[in-house]
Length: 68
Image (cartoon, rainbow, N blue to C red; front, side):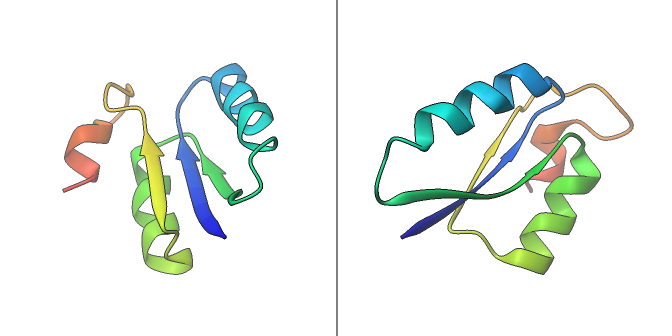
């Protein structure tokens, strides 16, 4: 099973991706977030196999910077 984290500042998009991934037998959304801080927290605490990030999130730190 591949664990997936989703981080985006648009809740409707996260809900849609969760609905799509729920149909896949080998993917499991294990966490979600809405900020660059969440990217760092999720990756360091939960170690998902994949993190899907909105690179253009608004806020103090953009998603693209937080992924590095």
